[in-house]
Image (cartoon, rainbow, N blue to C red):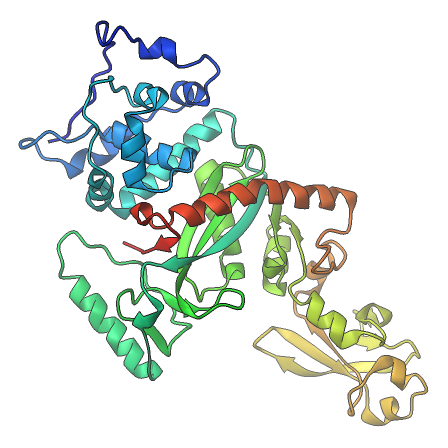
Length: 426
């Protein structure tokens, strides 16, 4: 049976009035006045019966989960220990000084009972309240991701053939689906198909920096530029690249906020041709470094850049600095580009060959099938300086200021009560 916290002042409770003990400009005052946590009761009512023991009020549970992240508390155990010591926490939770503090397991049990769908609904409702309160503009969006260790030891990873790994994962999910109160994550295309963690098959064994390969997840998120409100999230196996989730996060943000994204901001890992084209076609300006800039810089150092070649859209040809013609020769389906090349004998006899190419068969260029859309974005940038304008520099600094605390908090709390950067999809 679902309980409901009674908010009644304790007039004779050690002669302490919590309302007077919390300062007028305390951040929790504004949050309590602005955000209505009461909607959670309606959302989770179906999770409770009509009879039985009375539960902790879902509103109090949701507020505790909020405090866990708001004040960067290391773990759920630690949160429950300090609630009784914090008058502002007691006031925020509508608890009295002598009220019994729930066990930390209340939060983990609530997560399991409420389920993924309820938390998605709670997240959307919370974002909607932030929009109504004027905390979200919706037009400028920052996107990033963190690689989080799964709650599984690296020793749990086994290596085998892709076929056997796929069979083991299928058997695991079939067994898991029979368990009570268990939900399985959405299916995904296996990228890391030769490795599997026996304790967490949904995690992917990947490296971070120069460290060891171990089971990890990618936590993707979108953050509104105005006040740093997280408006869209997704968790995937760590083998799913960050740049594959850019459009999904933008679409989720627009659905949750009701606003169209005008500017998408991300680091160079998101700067793929696919993302540039998609943003251009949907009318979204992109502030992203070029994912290939470093590689292209090394490869093209000391030779004519692509910009030195003029494209003729009528004849569909390029002209090199000496006026020779590069014609379309081959279509690359994988990256949707057309290869342009001059005749081998033309390059072989060119006086500027040393300044144009190091390849034995001559200079080649590649043009994306959506090159017109790519050309509409900002001038190509480097990895070190992803924004070439003063406005871009300001946007990049704003992104750092918004993302850094969120990345730190996300990593610290990914495992809930584990007290460290551990994570598991449930």
